[in-house]
Each structure stands twice: as C-alpha cells, then as structure tokens.
Image (cartoon, rainbow, N blue to C red; front, side):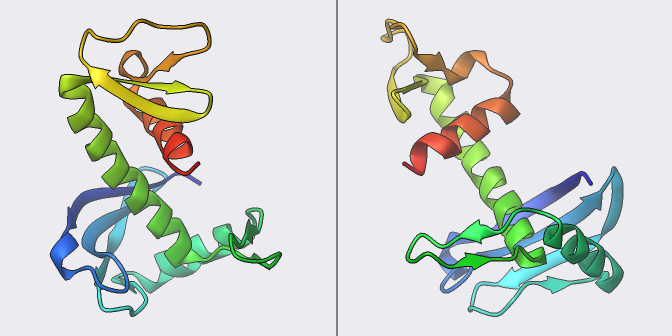
Amino acid sequence: MKLELKKVTYNARLSQETSAFAAEIWIDGAKRGSVMNDGGGAPNRYEDRAAEKEIDAYAKTLPKVKSPFSDDEYERDTDMIVGDLLDEHLEGKRLARMMKTKTVFVRGGKIYSVKAGGHRAQSGDVVLNTMPLDEAVKAFIAGTSQ
C-alpha cells in the first residue's frame, strides 16, 4: 500500500499536544479524502472513514513499534502512520531549506551541515544534497533521531 499526504498545511503555533494540520490522503495513487487535527491533543479526524479503516488494517500488518521509554511494544494505527507521513513532509521541507545554502551530510550516523562549498568529503560521508530528496529525507530523519 502506497500512502501519501498531499496539500499539507501545518501550523506550529496551534500545535499543542498534537500537530495542527490538514492534508489530503492518497492511497495507491487515488485521493481518499482528507485528514485534519486542530493540535489540541485529540485524534486525527478523517473525512473518509473507509479509508481510515483501510489504513488501520494495513497498519496492523506492520511490525510493532518499540517504546523509547520501556520494553513495551505497540501496534501501529492510522494516526501513527499519518503522523509519520506528516513528520516526513515537515522534515523534507526543513531539509530542502537547509540544502539551499548548506551542504548537509551524514557522518558516523549523525547529521552535519556546513556552508555550501565548505565540505570536504571524507570516506564514509553521505552527502544528502546529491541524493534524490525522498532518500535524503529518510537519511536525514535517521540521523536527527540519534
């Protein structure tokens, strides 16, 4: 299943307990309604309940998520999947802004950035500016979560 968020609007000022956003949900290349959250801590609201149930069923087939605070593991659900897609979208925008003026690279599993043209690649460096954006975003997220 290919899931995408399109036409994402996000408001950091309104985000308190959860992210305040609105977006279109696309499943396997077809628009399946919209999703929104006002940022006050409530679950996401889905325009198409059938799409929500379809994503939730798909989420149950994915590996469980390990809690960063304990040995507990949790099943994924629709809100977790949409939250991950929103994070990828926001981090992609942040990375794209950084790469306009900086060389961004991964060294030893950590993200570094230097003024554009100021980076001298060392063995093992992965320069994100030279990668397709979707791959660079995944590497960026992995490096920033360490």
